[in-house]
Length: 483
Image (cartoon, rainbow, N blue to C red):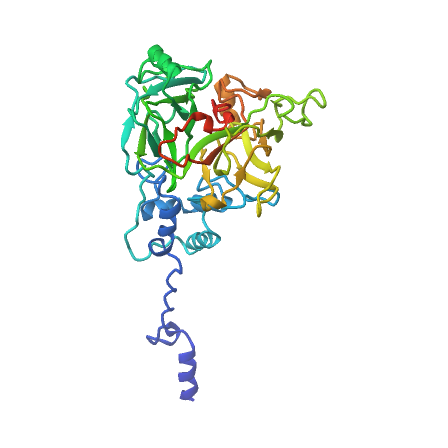
């Protein structure tokens, strides 16, 4: 009868049988399939770290594992919702641009899936490896930096427009191939319009009245520039002209920098915003200019909408407590200074605090071979704090064309309710506690705008001896730009 006892003893727990038997240890869990150093860090470096680093504009750093793991859930939520990285261009069924965009920072579906798996796997570190931390985009090959001789201090409740003449000292003329605006007081500078003042009596009079490098109040006058060279808004990278394209800086020209300050009831540190320029003597094949379409205040450009107080009589009015108000505008293009083969190189949408969505389309009077009669040029969400210029990712000869007789339409949406997180900022700027009707204006960011700013590529004169007059730019490129 001993054999059954032995069998039972092995079948029972060691403690019950009085033996030292122990069950074999469980196998170790498999290593995480996705880790920080091997998988997540390269994605975060590519798409997030330019802002999320020490001294960056983002509220926390993501350059090391500890910080990234701490914020992993929030980062995942932001990228899966499309909120981050900040890039508001959108592809929608009824309006998808023909081309993608240069330097599109959005994560691919595969990259989002990797980040999701990293979080699901427990945000493991993996084998320590070097993480490349990107630097902020900077213009290379700078040939000159222009800075005001006097700073300006933004203060008070009203937005301020200050102009400053700067001298690039190009007696023989030059071609601008790169430009970077460097805001001195970033929390007060709303945007900067950089324009050219061609040599002549009008420019001489401005210099005599205001001097070089000295800001003056230009809030009640139109932008004095002969034409606009570039527009900087928060979120924009430096302007880098592609090979063969440049902005003409005519002989003896001056540059005027118009800055829109948004003090919002605060006295800010003195601002001396500067601009870096890269110039070349090489004659380009094409020239770059800026044009703007939008901000229509009345018919026929402004179209009726259901919220107009008089049916059939359009007015630019965003009603208080309206969650989705739309204004639509149409513009027939009539003037390009005789230029042909005009290409749309870039698009820079512009609204103010209450904006939520903006779209620009074109209806061509005589489409070129292979070009659609109707085309979506730009489409997307709107965030006042993350404005940028979108550059088409396409060869120059494939870019969308624009011509006399074409109709450009601009459609904007606003949310004038407390559901809009920017509503509180808008009301605080005005000292108000409840939403109010909002109209078209440029005296304050609490007014609104509906504007598509286009970067245009136009053939340059064929010989280096030719004069490059500002008339080569469309006349409408010098209007609607004090935004």
